[in-house]
Length: 240
Ligand SMILES: N[C@@H](CCC(=O)N[C@@H](CS)C(=O)NCC(=O)O)C(=O)O
Image (cartoon, rainbow, N blue to C red; front, side, top):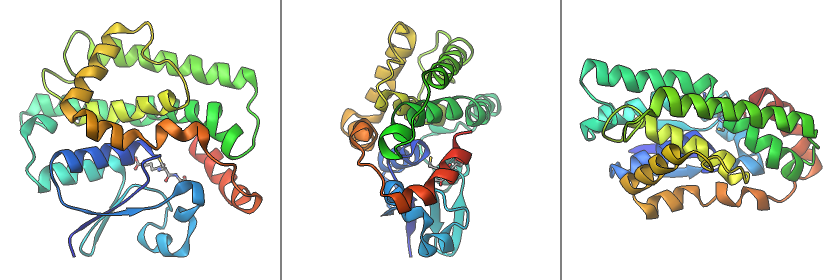
């Protein structure tokens, strides 16, 4: 059995893995786990990942969770071009630095922006107070300042002159608030120009394909009451 990936392109780390695998022509069988249908909560999926989260990689009997670990596994196993995850000690450490930072910073802010602005009210029918939303968006703004000021600076890409895993993980995060209707690139010309470079490096067609689902998140149908009851505690834990 070849490589299998369990993904939902609604999820930002799933999009990063999808783009990386497709861009590098890594062959895989896609299992779509539709989060909005609660497919991640099924007994069948719990056998693949007892944590009931996507993404998951299966390579024969080997099962791997955690998006960063999956990206690094793919980069190492398939010997992709060096710029994605450089062999040079310090260049590689720069990518590691971003991947470590984003998980508790930009990830949380982008996730909360999407859920507070769109998914909680539209999909789960849970109102979010204007104060809560304002706090979430202010925190996102602070994280964007760090992304631009500490990581991007005046470089072409986040960790140097070429695209790396850091850029892929960052752009797929930022498309979460974009999908929620936030103007994250407005008034940030450096970040906007970086987005164009990342899109061009990935390829417009693949970029659009990977982001079709999130860009329609606002059209999500409301969850039925049984599914809402099952999902709400997990969603609240995920976005806290
Ligand atoms: N740290 C994990 C996070 C995985 C994660 O939270 N996945 C979300 C989608 S982005 C999920 O499956 N959520 C379902 C839930 O928590 O019920 C990673 O980076 O892979």
